[in-house]
Structures are given as structure tokens and as C-alpha cells.
Image 1 (spheres, rainbow, N blue to C red):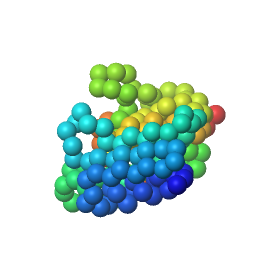
Image 2 (cartoon, rainbow, N blue to C red):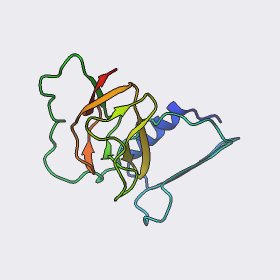
Image 3 (cartoon, rainbow, N blue to C red):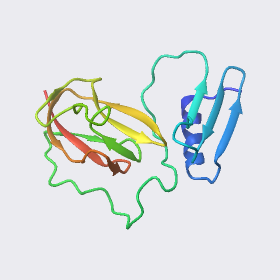
Image 4 (cartoon, rainbow, N blue to C red):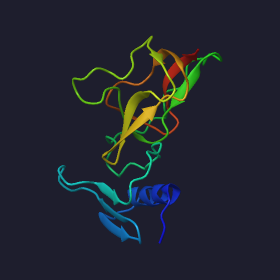
Length: 163
């Protein structure tokens, strides 16, 4: 049995929408264990396989109850988006973090120059920390989300003036 990144993404998304609390899946060259709603010290997802080159983070559905209850509001509307700015959007439903850990400096500040491949924030989904890397070089002119705030798929996180 083979499991590529797309299949893994689909499996995790389906698990996020289900009531399944634990799943173990084994193939010829991998073992996947997913556990939810266990004590914080327990791993949530482990994939044991031969080392592979780092891959870009992939979207993962958030588990039920991970976003505070309340009326669901659409992502904030972009105020008259300027055509000279590039919008950096959330590739998944997650919690947005500007720093690698509490008390540490933010990855980027307003007015900062960023480069392609530079980590600009962390998106946490299902207890997995996904570093979001810049896909454009330039100056950060807007940061639209507060640290520790839940974000929706496609929500604009930052705007960058390329250059």
C-alpha cells in the first residue's frame, strides 16, 4: 500500500470531520497513527517512513470543537484591495501565530522586508504546527490577523508590496 501527500491530506480531512478518535494504518514502508482528544502529552499524528525531503505544509481540516463556539462570521472583507499588493492567504482553517513560541519575537513585523521561502507565521491545525513561507519577496504593508486568532481557508493574513 502506498500513501502520497494528497491521499494523506484527504484522509486527515475526512478524519477531522468524523467522530473517529484513533486510527492506525500500516503499509509496506510506513505506519500512520492518528489520535484525537487525548492528553496534551500524547502525539496527535505520527508518520513513520523513510526520511523524505521537507514538503510544503498541506491543508488539514480542524477537528470539531477546535474553534471557539459562537456565531460563524465570514473572513473579514478586504478593504479596497490595492492592485500593487500581493495578498498572503490562509491555506487552511487554523489558528494564526506570529511567533514561534509565546514570548519570542514575531516572524515578521509591519514594514519588514521578506524573501521567498522565509517563514512568516505558523498555522496550527489539529495540533500540527505548519510554518507558512513567503511566496513573494517585498515589504509587509499590512498584517490583518491578531496573534492567536482562528483563521478561515482563504482569509487574507498579510499584504506585501513586491519588490
